[in-house]
Length: 302
Image 1 (cartoon, rainbow, N blue to C red):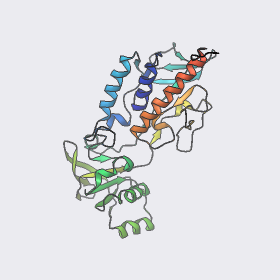
Image 2: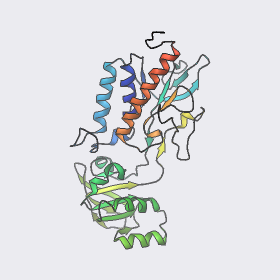
Image 3: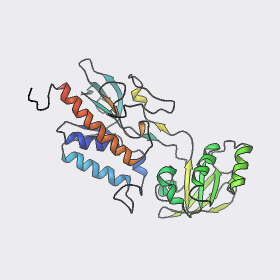
Image 4: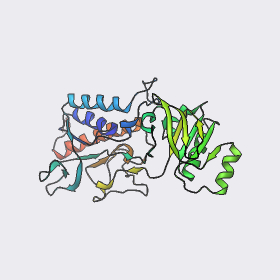
């Protein structure tokens, strides 16, 4: 849970003088994002790794503890709060009064040579975040069937220099093909065998058909991105058809009392700035709840 939303929650709560433990397995979207360019104060871009490293330092400065482990089970504790079992803890689960889930999304990245080097630099997954990066650029949509066509439609606002590569091979219907043709978007029913790139900057796609496409930007459009919410299914929380958790828009608390959900697993646009806001907002309300549970009252003249 050590992504951007989780770290922001930890920083805010630790500054409220609360004992905070962050249980985290390395990974997540922010770990592969090499250059966010749409965040206030970072006009030249900033990596997800920078946020994660600096966030850990900042949270630790205020006393937050970090546990490198995987949570295997969550349950309501008989004495109140929650029991958190991890692989490493074995028969000795942790107990907590409040719980924050910031487990993020798992993306279905295709196995294409050179892809990881380019992610976040010249290959992207979110047109809302990075559509701007395609302006004036020869841009490929590498995807699967209708998902690729839909992505191309969103990117057409930013660039007309588009090509669709149906890497996944799912069928595209006649209407969709006609749309691509009308918009002047080239279509290739082939797999991407290799990316030609230098320092993460895309230069060419080599296809299974033997063709080579000169492009300098690409967007991925595959189905199967999963909100990591399986651990919550034992609780009284509302999970929608796409796997995202419903939270109170004011507090970020789920339908299960004392359990919060922040970041990409919640129902909202998946943006770093929103993840940070979620974390700070949730922490403020967790502090209020802990004061209530501890029987603490704010200063009063009554």
